[in-house]
Image (cartoon, rainbow, N blue to C red):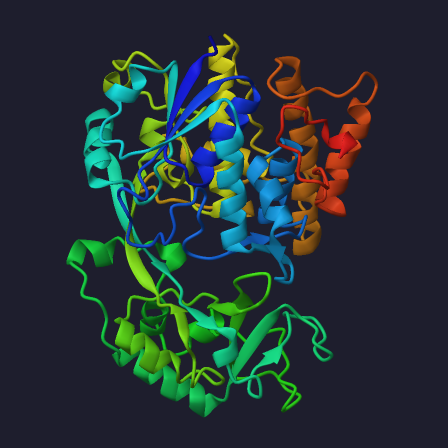
Length: 497
């Protein structure tokens, strides 16, 4: 009989881990509490549902987010292939039609003969561990109260919570196209160019908007909730409270934009990103909020072009639960506490519950946890992930006991090892990080292949694979299969595309 892994949570991390393990001949029992137990922000019962934004961030190879995408594709990520299949125009970012993306992933999970998708609330870990050879907990930031209590028994008092915010979505046909203009930053406008709609503010319009935004009624938070607001996802009204011009240097920055009505840069500008392939609704980029629903409608309709906006979704605040990864998890995302060890099977944690932030980071952590479990079940030691890679740097930071006051973090160049030779030009420095990371990833992938954890290159083609990975860091990201089959059991090496 195949070995069995229980995975709790069918979000991005859990879905990726399930597909990766099943592709390796390991039976998976994937447990998802929706729709039996809803959450404050999910609107469907589909797996891998995106709830805050439909953007997976930058595709630029010389960015940290772009490096992470190259790593996912080189390692055969199933969800990255699905994101490619259902991408929507978003300038230099990878955004997806969220409904089509999650439906695709759900169908693939349901069709796999080695995956059993169970719809029930997981209230403890012991009952699942008793019927499995390993356990992956990927219940995400909205882990149910019952399971959070069960996790607390394994972690002591080290599990923490912060509050996150989701931005509103407006219907496209309710926007005033006469006031908005289409342009991506630093790209020429006109002739329908650009993937973003932009709402330009005059100085007077901006001043009036900020005054109302700061004075608007908010959903009341208890003191500890306000204190624990995640700094990387601050509500727009909290940013405005830090200073009248703070939004102009954040979500409302006008740099790289030219208002065609004036021929000049606007005083401030809100960008709107398409939510679906057909462009029927748009996300207010960077406008996470904790205003009451009635105040959101009143204040946000002061934005030029949104005076008659119809809201497909209003902004919400919700709890995010995560572990104190530096004290609890090792480099394989394994939970190492006496209570966890007493379960008798290895327990791994993936996704935002593991203390990472971001969609692609969640997918990558699910893939990493799957590789770690596959190695354990095969009696192998998982090769060390180089810190020169994007996720390797994040993993090293997140599992370093020296990291204090930990909050979830996304990949960025600030946590990567410095270059051997100092590069003063920022663009060249980032390109050097990416090139170095591609080389480290090629070496890592070869080590995985040597242990049978990923498909190996055909004899004599290892150099070609390295070349392709390096090319992805300097000239493009399309290293995955064009037909999206990069995550199947018949996957080929990156050199074969």
